[in-house]
Length: 201
Image 1: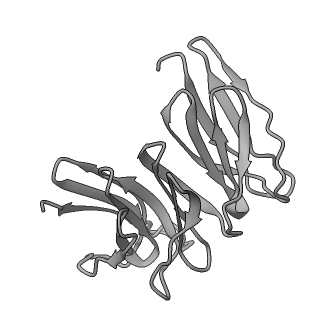
Image 2: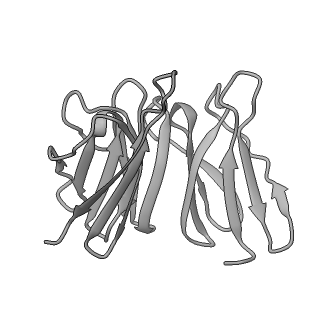
C-alpha cells in the first residue's frame, strides 16, 4: 500500500549493519532487528504478499518473516547468501542465492526447506514465481532454472544465449525477461544483457 512499504540493504562488510526500513506514507523509519545468525551485514531483497506476510533475505542464509507486528528469524538451513525472494502468497514463496554454488529454498504449507538442485548449479541471483505452481531462477553463467513447485523438480533451461551473469527475471503474460551483464569482470568495457523468452505452455 502507499503507506506500507519496506526496503532493505547494508554494506556487506564487517563494519556495516544490515538495514531494514519502513515507509508509512510520510517518512522512512529504520526498524531494528535482533539476529541470532552471526556476521550478517546486509539484507539483499524483500518481498511480501500482504501487510502481515513479508520476507527478507540476506547474508549467510538469513531469512526474516514479518507477521504484521514483529519480525522473526527463520531457520533457512543454509549458510550461503540468499540473494532474492519472490512468491504468490504465504504458501508459495521461493528464495535463491549462493556464492560458490546455487541454493534454492521454498516456503509452502509444510514450512521452509531447501530444494535439491542439479550438481554444479551456478550461484543464483534472481527469482520470479509466475503462478502458484512454477518459478524461474537465473544466475551466473547465463543459468536459467525452471522449478515445478508441485513436484519440486528442477529443470535447467539450456537454450540461454549468454554466459554473462543474470541478475533479475520477471514475466508478463507469456514473455519472460532476464537481465544482467559482465559487471564482475573488473575492467571496462562493461556490458549489459537483456533476454526475452516465450514461456507459452
